[in-house]
Length: 271
Image (cartoon, rainbow, N blue to C red; front, side):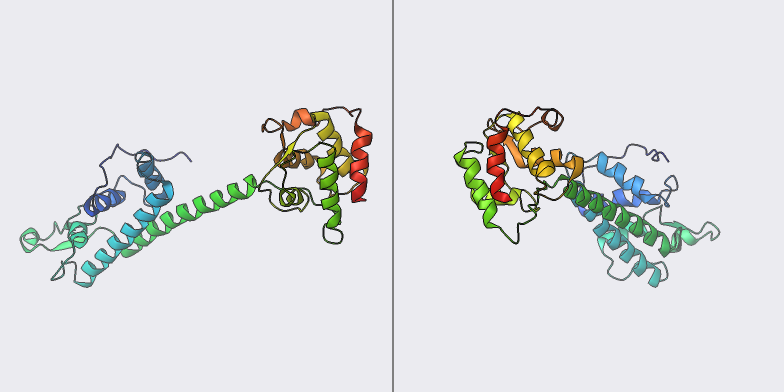
């Protein structure tokens, strides 16, 4: 379903009155109250240069609850203002979208007798819709964060023989395949199965990294099987010696290098 169209409504939200005024527009009879998320998404879009999405929706929810509270106080007072009404209570009471004079009572306007246009459950529906929008956004945000986490390889004997990863680190460093400044703790992370914090600088060429992963993963089966995902993990774990990320499509199409025997020798410390 396409989003509803709203007439342009933009006022800088510099005080409580303007926040409440903006939110009360949802109760205009042109707005479909069953789809409150479209209203709030629209209101955010015209102000997104000023507010973060999280802040804007949470702020709207705070004011919605204050509006509902004001409506409840008016209702409990037989649709009249209380003795010491708050500014928000006055604003809600005077809103044509919420209350109107009883046109069947000719002197109602003089006695200020008003009748509600909406029931309390209408406010609950709007609040529920906005909460759903906030929850949905947080869920998407958390999902995106999970997807963007950089995973690693998991050496099958990482628990039983963690010392072997240290020996492997020393061998690759001695042979010049990894940068001399590589920290052991960062190297161990690459073979822990945990999230990568600091990628390893690979000093060798692309074909040598290609062979290292093929031998590690397919030839000697020293790490958990990642199937084709091994190349994504590779580019997450290793950077070129210029600090640039490898292209996984290009990386997996490399050929076996002449130095493959040297790489096999380094890998044997893990067996």
